[in-house]
Length: 274
Image (cartoon, rainbow, N blue to C red; front, side, top):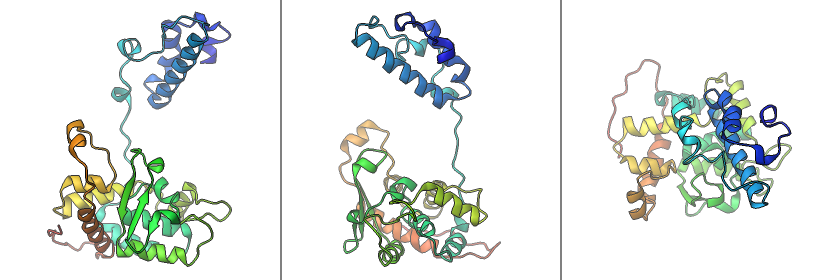
């Protein structure tokens, strides 16, 4: 922005200058460009509120820049997280369990719960009800902004019981030198396992593929297990429950599948689990 706007007074910023600042990165770095546009808009809104310029904001998207630039979704390349094919998950879990590190337990728990990495790394003991076998993630830590209950399979509970024996603070997966384990610890774990081709988030895709290919669980149960937002506004308005008991069966089935180690080249017939 600085090479374009320089020391120009704020009232001199117009659509032409905004376009000049955004166009070089709009197609190559759409995510960054979208954030920059938003920040320019916020600054100019503040300036207008302070009477440093008029209220017509040249960085506004709707009714302004949307007529001059392609939508970010049109230029943003879809990037999929590297995922492990689901027939290999049993062997991976077996290898993972040989590692005593906290990062290994955190990744195992993330796989077994199909939760996002950040949700797992930020987990606190106060969120865990071992007796009821429920992990309740508060809305403040959810991408959707809504509280999410996770049914805990026997395998997931075993991970928690192991961590409880090593409890240091209020975090389920504490770091060595900090209160919370970092995402880098998971990344380094995968590198040490010679699996730099994978990402922690990709295991959610592994779970989704397994559920679609190997079970008869309804897609809405699977999507709710992944804490995905309901895109259909009408459906979202009428859906009140969280399909918890159905999700409990799903997660137990997933844990059972993760405990299976298939021999290379062995053909395993798909069967209905739901």
